[in-house]
Image 1 (spheres, helix red, strand yellow):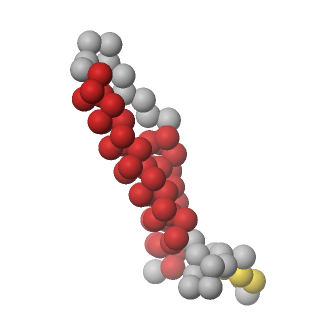
Image 2 (cartoon, one colour):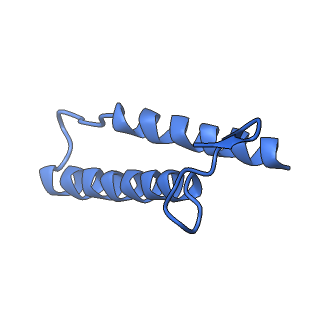
Amino acid sequence: MYALALVLVFLLAVLVEGLSHCTVNNPGSNGVASGFFQTGMYAVRAGLAYMVSTSMKDEHGYGSVEIGKTSF
């Protein structure tokens, strides 16, 4: 189950990076609608990045990824 959680967090981080490099600018589109869409995409990306960062921390603020017996 722990390995599945790590894979899920990794895939979520890949999705956040993909959204960071995604730009949608159509030359003929409405500027206001395009601005709202970009703002929405930024909010989704920020929320997902927050989920990734909090999923890698335990309740004391330290990293909870364990390799062997050591905790980082």
